[in-house]
Amino acid sequence: MSTASRRFASAAQGARAPWGWAAAGLCLGLLAVAVLAAPARWLAAQVERASGGQVLLHDAQGTLWNGSAQLVLTGGAGSGDQSALPGRLHWQLRPAWLGARVQLAADCCTSTPLRLRADAGWRTLQLQVADGASQWPAAVLAGLGTPWNTVQPQGQLQLATHGLSLAWAQGRLALAGSVQLDALAMSSRLSTLRPMGSYRLQLAGGEAPTLQLSTLDGALLLSGSGQWVGQRLRFTGEASAAPGSEAALANLLNIIGRRSGARSVITLG
Image (cartoon, rainbow, N blue to C red; front, side, top):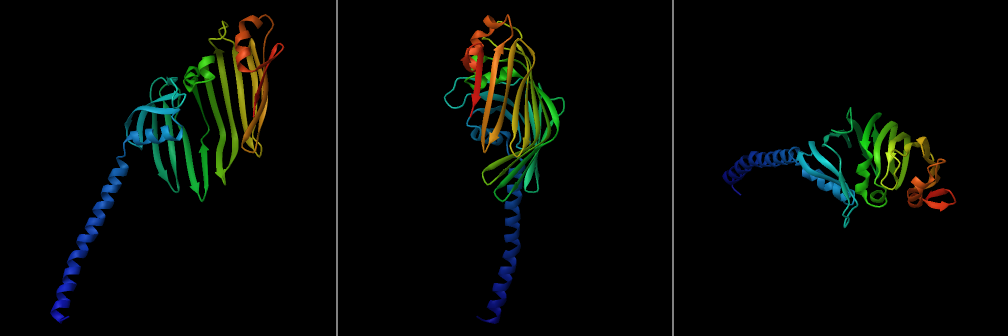
């Protein structure tokens, strides 16, 4: 190749290089805009897929990063049961180093937003939940199908977390911190008692997380305890009626456990 030819080829390559960088920059810019403007329905589709169709985000509006929807619980594929949370659920999603920060607020149920942080590593995932409290209508559980659609619970669920974190590593789940769920002024279509009582469920983390059920007040008496063995919960409890309430609670006691005389025995795992 002559000197002139080499100079011409070099000049052509130099001319093409800026255009190449410009094209690459344009593509990256368009990709960034697409990610930033990702519609909220993308998140709705992922939530539906991950939950097996039991948690739906209806009428999702906004973006993946800032959006809102109506939260709906269902019995899953093929189920006709569903119930919607009053008002809308609002979220903010922010990327973090090897993870994300999430803030959730429900019109009906959170006085302050719930905050979560997820961190991913090599075959590990950790979810940290900031200390907080919220209150939810028990009636929404009926949308999950059996047995909730039969019991049709009514009342308020007060949820509080303290130092809660969950970590998945090598297929195993570790839990730290605690969760307290108070079910207040509960009633059911299976009983004429209004309300039947109030109850507390306490989950405590550790090497072998434990679960405790107790009665705060009321005619329906519930108690029990459980522990995670490996990845399985083994729980044993019982339900009974306070003196004078046996007839009003008979149907419910037949449903929630195995009858043993005046008691109904509850076993899981």
